[in-house]
Structure formats: C-alpha cells, structure tokens
Image (cartoon, rainbow, N blue to C red):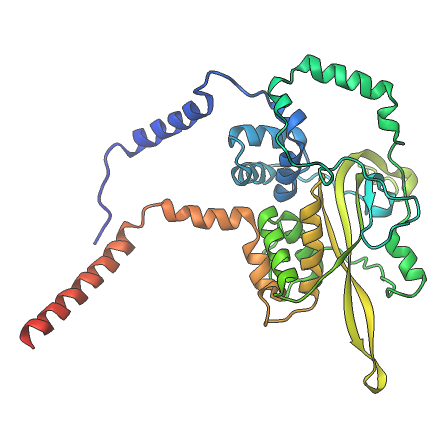
Length: 371
C-alpha cells in the first residue's frame, strides 16, 4: 500500500504560512522587538537558558516570530545557534566573582553580607494590576525619574559577596570540593552517552524545559525520591566573561580580554543525608545540589539543583534518579519535536493497522457465523 498523491501540496503549504502571518498581525499592530526585550524579561531569560544562547535581542526576535510560544522560540534560537561559528572559548569563570543583585538563604537568617531581596515577585500579592492597562511610555519615564531621584530605592549597587557554603566547609559541616580541571563535555557537539558525566548532566539540566525540570524536582520532594532540600544560597547577578588573547600572545590574566558579562541565577541546595559510620552509628550530613542558568530563572535553578543531586545518586527505584529518564525527557526541542511529528502524515502505518483490525473483526464474525 502506497501514499496517495496529493495535488497542490506546495500551494497549500504556502497559503498555510501566509495564514500564520495573518494570525500574528490580523489586528493591524506590530509588536516591536525592543518592546519585547524591555517588558518580557522573564520569558527572554527562559528562552535564552533553554536555547543555550545568551542574546536578549535575538531572544526577543524569536519570541516575536513565535508569537510568544516559548518552545517554538527556543527551537528558532537553537537553529540559529547551530549556524554561528565558535571563534573563542571563554576563560574559566569563577561564580564567586558574581556581582550580586539578589541573594537570599533559606537556611540561615544572618549571612555574611546580609540577605539582599532585589527584584522578585515572591512578596507580591499576585493580583492583577489593572493600572497596567493604561501604562504609557510617559508614565514609565516619570516613574523611573522619581525612582532614580530617590536613590534607586535606597539599595546599594551590585556587590561581590562570599558564599554561604564556604563557611559551612570551614566548620567541617560540608566536605571540601576539589577542583576538576578536566575539559567538560559539550552536549551541543557530541551525543549524550550513558553513564553520563556531571558536565553533561549540568548542561542538559540548564538547557532543559523549565516546566519539565520543575515538575520532576517537585515529584522528588513529594515522595519519588523522598528528598526535602533547603536553599543554602540563591544569588542572581552578573558574571564577567573574558577570553585569552586572540593572537595567542600569553595565557595569563593580564593578557586576557574582557568581552562582557552574563546575568545568571546560581543556587546551591543543601541536601540532608543520613550516613552510617563505624559500629552502625548514623550521623546527619549535608550534600550539595547545584543549579545555574541564564537570566533570573530561580525556580528552574532550584529544581536543577535538586535533580543534580538525584542524578549523582542513581536509583532505579525512582525515575527522578534515573539519568536516562530525566535527561532524555526534559529537552524542549527533542520532546516537542517528537510530539509534533505526530501531526505529520502517517497514512501507510495507520492504514496497515486499520487493515489488521478489519481482518481480525472479519475473522471473528466468520467464526461466530460458522459456530
């Protein structure tokens, strides 16, 4: 059985694409990319993280083209990323050098440098603000003028602050972490293999679809893994990015070139674990789960830290501790692409199944008649 020839397929596809554009602009208004970049910070950060491309302008363009659909925007941005040459590799970035804009700890009330609330929706009432319906550029500019005149809310600028976990290590409450200077794997250039390395797992987790990563971490806390972590430290800020001299003239700090900064969210989760010591004695210790992603994407970074710790301790009893289950199913492009392919023609395979069902029904009817 073969495919049925369809006439006018190309014309139909062209008209479908025209209709898609019509749906986007049918109200006679165009959304400026600059407006998206200025007012959709959360969506831009999510798209940049899942596409592994830090460029707010391109993310805003992808969001416009995708009509606000994040999974389609990620698809567009990843496709573009694959065409961009990689001319340089940045020097190793130490997260301790972050210029912190927001920094909290759910584990300790008093931390060195203090809690910095920064910008967050955590303390808002989650009520619709109908005044935004009448918000104009003029109103926004006037508000900004007053805000700056008040000294930017009385807050200091970004600071470089010590890490909470370092103090726990100094007390011996958390084992020291040795530097691993081996070159990390690159999941964008080499296929994932199992067992995976931690660098592969962290890359896929930070590229993972935000909702999927969050859902799996939520399942862990609910009981599929029986883990209840605490946020040791969550920080949002910018990290400086430098590259070695393009001509290869020296590879020390003095010859490095500063090329910009990236805004990230970093989380270190504290995981309580019971460890059996000598003579059957059990003690409570803490392990670390790590999460870092582009932009201010706190829920995802926390969820990433939970799953990072889960995958460090494989346990086939729980899907959340199975690296193949987690890593293969959180990628937005892979998962949505496979689901979407079901819309493509499956005429031959379905007709063969249908013929099989018809044959079975016919045989059953004959058996009833002869019996």
